[in-house]
Amino acid sequence: MPEQNDDRINAMEERMAHLIRTVDELSDIVAKQANEIDRLTRRMAMMAERMEAPDEGGAVFTDQRPPHW
Image (cartoon, rainbow, N blue to C red; front, side, top):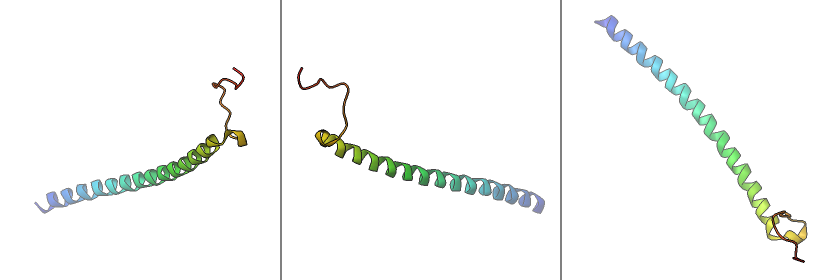
């Protein structure tokens, strides 16, 4: 009986170690994604500012008709 309990405890410890590693890996992935989202949010804000003032060197849209049309 004690051997069976030791086997169960070892199996649970092994599963726990795998779960801890998985949680750590997922935490790293979430942190990287948060950084990427922050970077993309800043870039979108910069692009939105440029689009609001196209006469001041902002974005030029090729799908828009020129003013003389």
